[in-house]
Length: 109
Image (cartoon, rainbow, N blue to C red; front, side, top):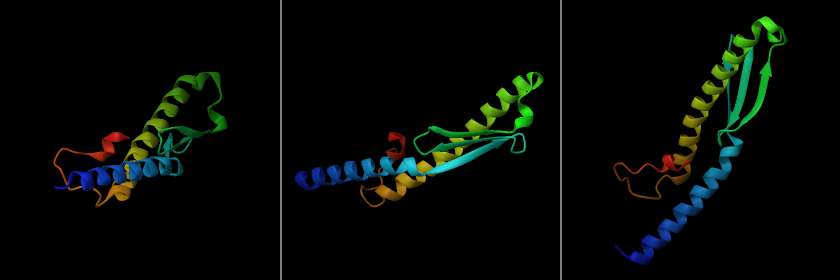
């Protein structure tokens, strides 16, 4: 293998990775809990960008349930966006490097 060619390929992969990571901010998904009473929206950078809470949950008696529903909704959205982010990264870097067992570019997120 030509070392200069390989170095050029690495730089190309780095560029594609940066582009893919920048695009993750545009990927969003939501997670719901309590039959939609709490809806969390996260982006591909794993940032919570919106949280909607049904007004009926704003009572002192429901504080513990509200906390549990928020945690469940955020965790669901984070799990879903991780899958979407890996797919985006895979799509952006497809064909850039040979398939090396154990070398997963999505772990760089």
